[in-house]
Amino acid sequence: MKRWPYARIILYIFLLFFAIISIFPFYWMLNVSLLPLKAVYADPPQFIAKNPTLHNYAEIFLKYDFLRFTANSLFIATTAGLGQLFTCSLAGFAFARMRFKGKEFLFGLILATIMIPVEVVIIPEFLLMGKLGWIDTYLPMIIPSFLIGTTGVFLMRSFYENIPRELEEAAVMDGAKPFMIYWHIFLPLSRASLSALFIISFLINWNAFLRPLVYLNTKKLYTLTLGLVSFVGEFSALWNYLLAGAVISVIPIFIVYLIVQRQFIEGITSTGVKG
Amino acid sequence: MKYKWFVPYLFILLAMIGLFVFRVGPLLFAGSMSFTDWSTFGSPTWVGLENYTEFLKDSTFWKVVGQTLLFSLIFVPTIVFISLILAVLLNKGIRGTTVFRAIYFAPVITSTIAVGIVWRWIFGADIGLLNYLLRSIGIADPPSWLSDRRLSLMVVAFVFAWKRIGYYMIIYLAGLQDIPRTLYEAARIDGAGPFSLFRKITVPLVTPTMFFIMIMALVDSFKNFDIIYAMTRGGPGRASTTLSYYIYLHAFELFQMGQAATLSMVLLIIVGTVSVVNFYYRSRWVHTQG
Image (cartoon, rainbow over all chains, first blue to last red; front, top):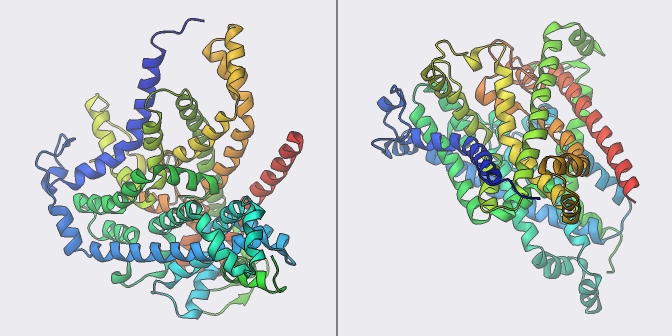
């Protein structure tokens, strides 16, 4: 069968069309973040910033605490992510390689809770955090993510299940204890899975919004997402500042994404996690 | 590997503390809270099924449930079809596939709040970019999108779909790559055109993936709190309020913890039903495969 000569061109037009829709909002974010306030409301709008300035960034960083917000988000996402690595690899190891009573039940329970939205548990969680005296601290954002990576346990278990027995047996012959086997053999082997897991959980916590919204009152503790939203409330007309803030919340993720794109995509889709 | 009976439990200890203290515990607690009248600042009183019966009689509740389902009704088909189209186009193995894939995936990894804010600008009634374009092509009176009570929910659902399409596209791509190339070659030799290849081979063989994506997207569609908060805060009025936003509203703005817990049970029942359907379908599917 002969191929229609224009098929390829039409295909590219389609792809390009969707590509523009996918990235235009990011382009617009960046564009507006470089405009002085007067140009923001110009008619016609400036599709390409005429006199780009970094003034907006200097302002939001220094005057509106965004430096602090960024640091807060970074701290929360990093600690929660590191916690996940530890908790999930330990549990994943046990579920994949050890035999114990209630194993199937407990793993089933983990799977069953994967789909439950945060909104369902946030109310009792809020009361619990109140009892613990953790309201208005970083702890409610860090501790739950530190401890429960339902998808992380799932990911690590699947990886550890596929590691050949021989590797483990050699160590057993040398008299190694389970923790040593986990630490010296399994953990180093799973570097790729661990980095995927870290990326996922960093991303979730960096982008998280409901928990910071509910738990944080003191402005100094705000995360970037919460800072953005509160900025909308207070200075709704300063779109150039606001979008500079939005760029800051997006750019670090994009940079890492461009470097380790494959792990990003595979990591996120393999676990069914919401980004 | 030799170990004492309690060693595995030490390995899973942290994860189990997390599971029971921050997941299962709160879930059960939310269940019992839903039978109480509990203001944030007061103590709970047992009211039995009253919260449930009150909501069943409440027209706002039904409106919110309806809007939740309408949101899904827009979100899910958009996801199921557009991400399929993108995946099929990318599966042709043409030059630039990786670049396009990376671009389509970009919205997935970004903060919902940040993109919600930009889209709010784009859909703004007066200074909005979209309305500027509409006016410049001669539409004098374009809709006010997010402040229009008939449109706001739809706009938000589309934006959320925009954000999630790349994710489902990747899942489709994995499904498409499992279809043997030889099938296409054989059909082509028999004279099948690109359209009938798509209809007779791609669609039937990608159906299991499609069903999976439908379920995933359905569950996904209920997790719309962030995007609604960023774009409309449930407004105008209650026009774009869905269950997850309504839960927040009751708990943290109206301070009615008991009622909020009742609403979260309703959401749990909906998500739970979807998951159970998914579970049965998948086990049936695996069975026919074996």
